[in-house]
Length: 367
Image (cartoon, rainbow, N blue to C red):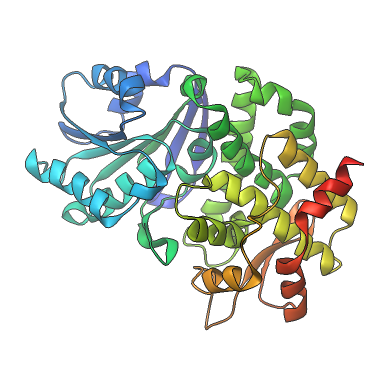
């Protein structure tokens, strides 16, 4: 087992990474404050891992809350199901909420924990690669609004994150690829040697090699922990973790939540961010193409939806969380391994990026 630390003073917490951690009750007990525990999971994960977690929590008063599965259910209505479960079982303010599932479950359970009786204990047990390397670490919680993704929520740190790498064995290939989009992101924004490692080890990652997966998860979590420790509430540096997300969130919102997986939208959105970085003269076409090929090797889409017009993108991007004082800010690359957040770009460069023929670009790379 590997252990990392998210350094946030009195809100610091460990990230445990290893196999079969769901069967390690001592790890859980160290971070549970009372006798009541509420497990929040979904209809897909519950048949796979809920019984094992309930067994590890023998001796506690456990309430299991099973939600519908999917990004489309990341709503106020589904959030109320968590509160109904907590209140119905009379959970007090010493209860511990455990998120067992992917990013949607982690975001909603964390938001519920932040709100219930003005804040209760919270533990993350992410079961998808995307949630293991991204959403479970850093304390971002929330739900979607019809006009924008993750626009309602709170910063609320967990007491611990338990990453059981064996949970990836049951992960569908499409979900695994979606998680790899966020893994690749870390190489692009802050760790070029990691990007090279990913190019060499992508086949092993997609084959669920445990050694490769553990290393990729550890490296990704270490990068995120360092950024979160320096900028917990995204006042500057942390925003660089959103490379490709402004374009990607526009895709998710326009297509309907869940039609494109988050990681799929981030992959196509990152290609757009790289295209814009190239048009600004910051990276070369070869560097852009290198990233495109890596996303393709991970089984990810690299072309945004052809039916989306520049006007569609601008409409959705106008409500992005990085908009300040009416000015759109984007995460771009100065070079591979160095991301920046900027609103200083010519409008014609943005327009050209939104109008680019990405399908033709990908066809060129085949030749």
